[in-house]
Image 1 (cartoon, rainbow, N blue to C red):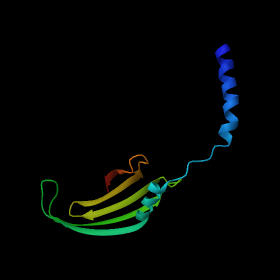
Image 2 (spheres, one colour):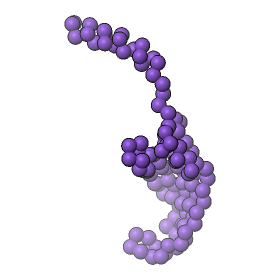
Image 3 (cartoon, helix red, strand yellow):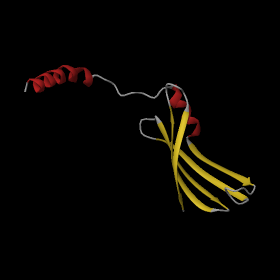
Image 4 (spheres, one colour):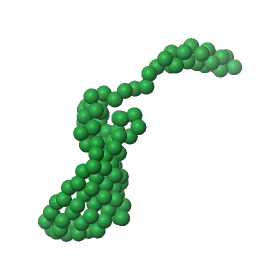
Length: 109
């Protein structure tokens, strides 16, 4: 019971300060991702390798901000000698290191 009262007292003391807290804002490292926002199209020719047959590929990509403007969402379609593929990706910047990282998921279309 005493622990509950202490917890409630701490909560009452912290809540007013939290109400004045502002939402975090994207920094310059996040704003640099804006370079990629928009629609992109690329085509490439590949030589045969153990990973893929020789041929051409066409990529159509659309980057847009995720709400809050801390991350980008990428919708991509790839068409080439190995068929059609759809891709969903996310791109982010780590504020401490400034490194940009991405992750994606692919599915045959």
